[in-house]
Amino acid sequence: MRALSLMRMIALVGLVLLVPPATAQEWPSRPVRFINPFGAGGVNDTIVAASRPGIESRLKQPMVVENRTGGGGQIGMQAIALAAPDGYTFGMVPSNTMVISQFLFKSTLDPLKDFIPVTVLVDVPLLLAVTAKHPARSVGELLADIRANPGKFNFASPGLGTPPHLASEMLVRSLGLSAVHIPYKGGHDSAMALATGEVQFMVIAQASLASQIAAGTVRPLAVAAKSRLQSLPDLPTFEQAGHADLQQIIPRNWWGIIAPKGTPAAIVNRLADEFRQVIAEPEAQRRVRAVGLETVGSTPAQFAAQLPDEARRWGDLIRTMDLKAQ
Image 1 (cartoon, helix red, strand yellow):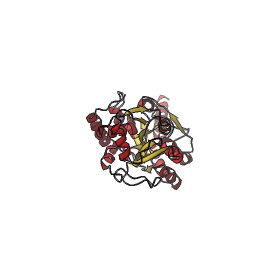
Image 2: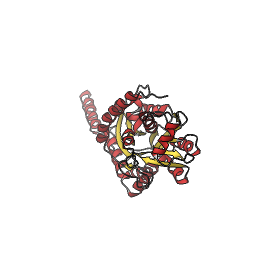
Image 3: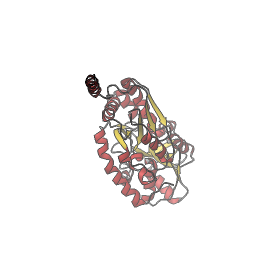
Image 4: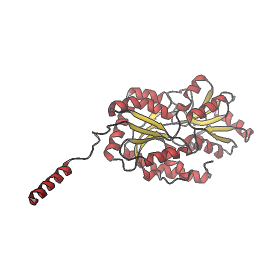
């Protein structure tokens, strides 16, 4: 009898071992959350609008976006890192949180070790813009006025340590100018500050200024891109505007998807593939290009490969310029 019971137990264990764990095909069975470490407005809103219909259709579950602002993105990044790695929480993050913020803020996180790269969704060219209340019609005119009035110009950013903040600081310092940085909570607030004349200029993505550009309350002067944007064909690149040096100063900016460390590879690969297919669809392409974004859709391996080089480059530059979060 005991031998029979032992045989039954062995058989039962064998059956359990033959049952595979949950697969990417079975995932997801409930809503999937995406944490954005910055406020609503700007690029992230465009990405969500362009990708949500397709992602929800493919996953057959709601795509829930949660804004967790503060600390230059560090609060949101902590929330992503501490989330259960079960495939139901991801981060929708800009490049600065993965390759720049670690050099500006004290944090227990190591972005290159504590997260799994899923996919880069879009590249985000940055443009230099002034409030329409300022008379400058070119980059040269703006720089000349700042130089003639040291300390009297303010520039905005959507937050400490963001690419717009870093790009503006690099522009000001590399040219030996004097201007005051005023950080805001997200792209919407910083765009409104520029439109009302609370600040005089900023470096920012077109997506954050789309409505203000259309309303004529802000004036873009040049874009840091290899060629003109389809959405703003009359806007010159910095090189075309006679400032090729500034083209090299302004950092590459992107938005992508990351996962908490330990998230199953099958789920990571499936989500990357789903986003890649969604952002390749004509309607998604139309939405992102309308505000100056370019779709990427990298694989997890491609995303992971680019991060160390970017971190080294910007770490060296931040140390050289002695930039610090305020």
